[in-house]
Length: 119
Length: 491
Image (cartoon, rainbow over all chains, first blue to last red; front, top):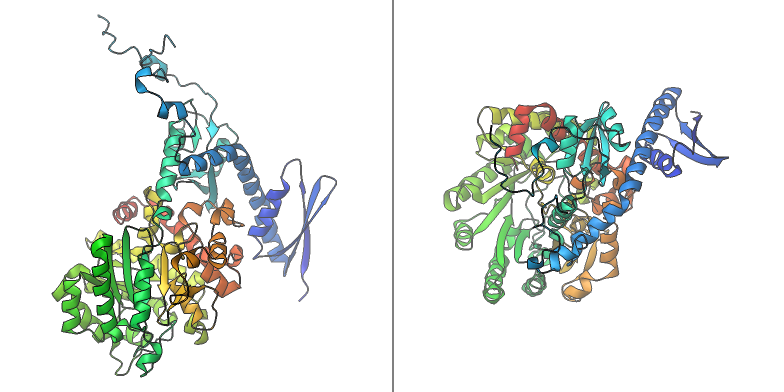
């Protein structure tokens, strides 16, 4: 049986290449993908066995790429916090509030005893 | 009306909270995955989850989520977003993550002693057993057992579980006695908490064994595949009476040691698929308060006999979903019985504590939560690794008790390579998966089915199975209040 090749084009101003690659990987049980980048556009050639599969996988790839792009947005915004949390979780020292955990409480280094209106 | 005295001027006036400003918020790390066509599951990296419709997820990520929608407070309290200067959320998250990963600090606490490979059953799904009259060929020697005890006590874990496995371990009961006695003597100055389990088909259970078990607080684990016809079909032995012997054994253990001193496990074969209600009813009739609906493992003889390929993961998932529904129905009628796999996962979803379940953690528990000592002194990273070896694949053999020390085995390149390949946070597809906090990796499964420790997840039966179970449990927690109440009681 002849395979069917369909091409989807993504604008790399709208989608990160990694998001497109991850979406293709996630759907790699349903189709074979070739990815090529030309002039700021990413062309994804998907190869399926039937026209029906092509329509289905195309819809799934569009949706999955949107999801992956959102995941990239979250990862980019939270990456540094995640690294800090991991370091904090496995560190014997406090990385978040070293002063608060090591200073003499009688000196009130965090100003807990100071009324907000005076701060 | 007189003004109330100001008791503590450090608190902001109440009016401050009446009109909430639409201030900016920061996102905290989270992952997400579709639950169904309209909803997403969001999980943070300590395993708390929230279900959002697609438009809400888009709003959240684009920093357009209004503060006056109910989801906002949920997202804030579960540490998906941060909208103040406080670092409390970060502190709490790091503490919770450290708690979740506590299994790493204790290191290996479960040790499987394969005291004999001999067995009188010839179960087609069995991975390892041998029908042999030659006691010396497939039984562990006392010398190997003593080495294994020394090895076990090298572990820093404060609790050590000694599990006697086979074949049929009661065929070498003399060695079980010797091991228990030596471990107890050694533990007088080690001071660990020791637990013993014998995994047995109970055919060779005697009064002497029961007395020994009572004296040393040993519990039993046995196989019960369902009603008599199904059990005997799955577990053939001379006399075709495996079911009756198992039932007699369960009764005698309960009479001598107590109701909770014997647990049962089932394995799903093709013949089991249409009988999930009957299987569960059998467990209820016998007074068990839990059942573990386990799929067949694709290792060893299960592959040789073709049993492993006789049903697809989706068929098992349908079996599991029907089983879960039937168990919930029993609970509604007042019979408390839980499904063990669901319990493990619910603990991961709804509590900050680790479960210790080898296949559902990252890094995987092979070697760092469990080690298997084979009858011939070989050391394996897991029981499944040992099963794989019985068909000639020694990938998960870490060494031999007579040749290698604890340090040599657990710092070997082979072992470190295996562990490195089980970090789901760095695996393709897993690293972005919303179910990552509940899942893990099974390098033995992926090696056996795909020839690769990590595996291609889009075609992985392990991935398909776990995603199906996670989705089903979250749907029940979200959409069925009655089921949710029962599921919460299973933790």
